[in-house]
Length: 444
Image (tube, rainbow, N blue to C red; front, side):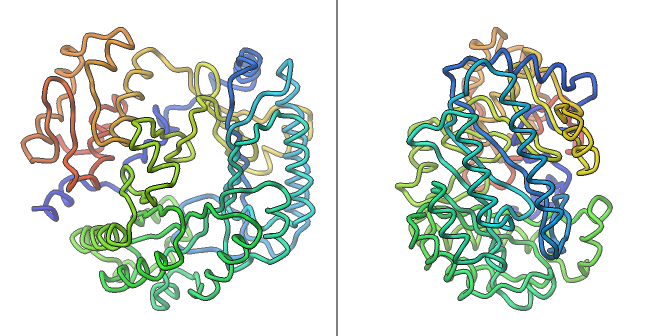
């Protein structure tokens, strides 16, 4: 039954619903002028999140779905960071006083590719232009293959208190098939380096559905990773879309598991991590019971934003760097996608926003419902509708696909409350898409 439902509802192109509406709805009608206006209108006492995008790696992982530049030289990275510093000044100048910061996230690419001195200097600039609280989370994504003891020391000195480590799989056969050779010992060394400098909140990224991957190798990887006791895991299913990402064309399609095998792998990883004491969070995360995500989920305040699942209560995300997305004021903004256009704008003293989206009242309603589904596996549609000024009965009757999901036993609807059954949590994206008025990819 589970595999047949996976076949019916699985679509690699379905959004992850970290934001709503999703990026394809963005347009040039919302640009730098709107962004500046929204920045100037931000309340001076509301905390914001900062996202800094570093689109560089030393080598290409064939499964990767993100735009990144491969470089062996540091010059291009240094030039990019210098432009990002200019962008920080340009954005900060739009506000009357330094905005309070509750959360900072360095993503990529490989943010840990920056030299220690450059990273320290970048953090110093952020602290000068924004007001950091004592409890602010500062997180960085790490590739263990290029991480150094000097960088761990710099992270500790700069106040980094959370690190996200890419693992994917410890199976050498899988690693060869995705061009990412990374041993358990290498990963454990990085974990120890981070903890030695006081960085104890550590995330691991795992994947299933990779070429040559099996249930056995998934279980073995999950067990070995859990033995290192990271605070949380993100477990992603590989989406093979070679028409979109050229590097994925290097993966042998015949070695990819089918939908039934993918479902078995996802279930096996989840069961392994739960047996190791981790709590399932939303669609694809697992956390120790004392981790912020687990505590937020238990208290009903888990959030989902452009960075994924979060315990952060900030409603504003300010993005820096090429292609970075921000959630500010009345909508979303995104910087120029290419480094060349991003660089041209910043070097000319202009904010690099290329497109965005202005939210409507209905967008906010649908976004709230989708967020609660993705976080809690349920949404109290009547309560959310009343908060946004909508008739919940009329609204729910307009969601045509709900009856199909209910008939297939994926969810239940009782007094307007939509609950996805725990055993079908891997279909959350398809359920969320039913509330996405712009999405028509799942079957009718």
